[in-house]
Image 1 (tube, rainbow, N blue to C red):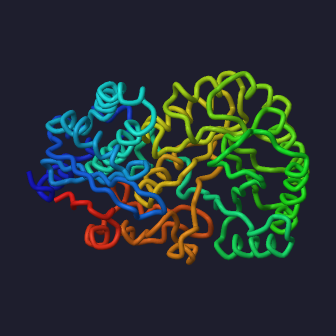
Image 2: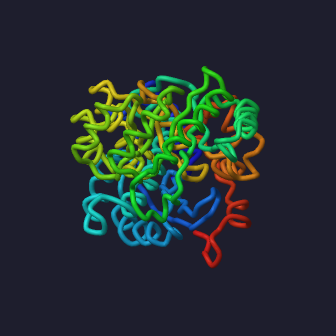
Image 3: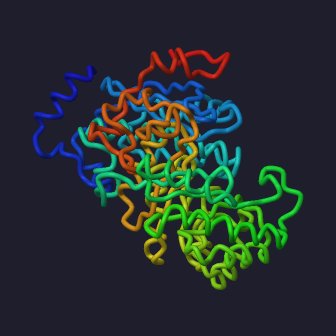
Length: 422
């Protein structure tokens, strides 16, 4: 079936073909008329970490593009996509997205218990399926996921920091950069004598606590009262140290204190949130509703942060956010992925009512224009700037709005030794 003739038939079918909220997807007259014919992938490094691009082809001539959250070299995700997921999807109807995600997660569960690399692979594939569904509907994904959007652009926060938090001049330089780029919020690493990736212990010294109090006050003085500042840790502290840091930085009124304790849920999270003078947030290393549930229902956090590119897909992220909303907990996103997953994540963020901010990285020279983030946005074929005045933009094209520049990816961003998907 050719794409042009298929879309023509879809158009003349009348109002019945206009896309409806997700729960009504199966009422579309296109159900059982489209089949997945192939699943392809290629390892790339478009952002600052390797990631796997996914391409799903259909007999309607419509393709979907997705991106899997990084692992060390994307070999793990590629193995799962080609050898576990592809046999499940080929010949299936993309409209049966939720059933297909269930089958993929069940089939891959013994590779990681629905955590880690297998779920990264499923999430990237789910992005591509949503891209197909949006194109079939001739609607952007953010207008159809969960019944529609709460915003037409998504507030972003920049993950960055002054060169030296203890230098007022350095903090002023940082503030000037944020203003130039248009951001109204940033996430700033706290001061630590240890590298978070090579911890010796979880204890903070008095001097470290004191320096954080002074350093973050310098940041607040530089950016002013109308700029949100998140204090960024990496799951690296014990309870006592986390509580002391929270009190030290409290005078500058942080947006949130991110990942102060180790990843797993236990009762110390509840105690910290109850005793902290500032909001506590976690979630970037959690997967699916099962991981988020104890934090939400037990009041263990004030806010949650979903890494939409790894937590199980757009629909799963929306379900997590909806669960949080019932407990009056707002949502932010973690995002260290490349441009394709960044766009997909933003589509989901637009549908979350109690949404705080979406992570954006500007640490590559190519993003110094303030109009792009998380790598080379030229691969998107987007037609508009992805980032404008600190907000992620949509081009309102069908699906994710991506027209992948395969030539650019192939010539510049493939992982060395990788073979192109054709």
